[in-house]
Length: 414
Figure 1: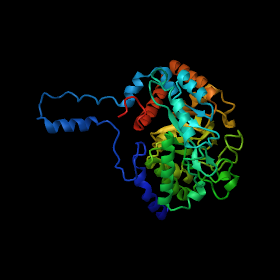
Figure 2: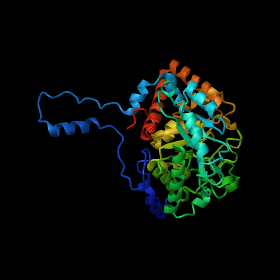
Figure 3: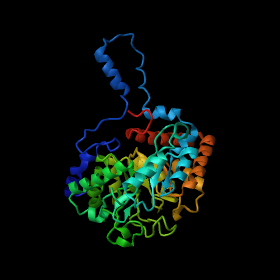
Figure 4: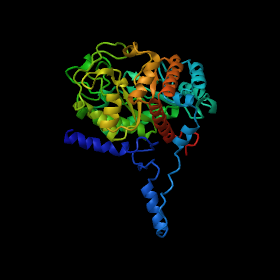
């Protein structure tokens, strides 16, 4: 990254510290959410007690976290439901509420023509959240998400939602101004009941491709043609969301800026034959991780140089190996849509969930809510027959519950 880009990135770094907490502003001091380590407990004890030759027993383990306590109280069905996010379209509140009650679905994302303003969104979310009972979700509240990037990708419109320009225009703003605009939008989302913004886009679209890139460049959704250009405004947008208490999501790992077709609409033209683990375009995602962006969305495109056999979201090499291992991402990983997307149409519905979790993913996003029971059943069946896969489910559920606890969505959240 050029020196000027590094300086601009540093301007917003303070806003991104502690992204996984419920941030209240860019000047908030980061606090650790980890329980005290055994060594720190031991040190504290030794400062208040005199040393004794007979005191050789190990210190007691730290008490369970709220997320661990909640996890222990959930049924297997409720745990599986925490890994499913379904679309909520206008007028479909009753259907989605029923899925929460019967299939224990833990998350929704607003999709479609939400043009009625903030009051209509608040009403819909309130109707859905009534189903998050002790019997349905263990009283864990429902995560609510939306695609509110700016430009042509703004699911929520009308009174209470200020429009934002597209990402290319955002990138031309002074970084403090962009962060302020994003924070204002985030505050509006938060007031309407939104917990997660499925933005910012971290994909890089080379100038040589431009609008020939179906999913991003065609709609000016990219912040730049290189990682050096895209990183500062991408982080500035994420910082604004965080300051408003809305979790940002970097997408679409490992990048869909060089494919020709949109994975929502096509199963061909979605291969990036160039991308390797050392590709400079991955710099945006590395920066997002380094600055604490808590959520990452993985694409359904193909990257033969990384995994010749699997689409990204179904690839252990890409999700567990590159994203979690090499890059060290420990947050929540979401899939891009696996419901209506043509790119995954050939994959059985249940396998879309199990393969994603097996690869290292956490929350399966489907634009077709009726698929939720099939997905949860597949997770339960495979977990019951495969202890190693059940461990992956458990780890994913704990990551989700830990993130929800930071937004005070668990029964025991402080």
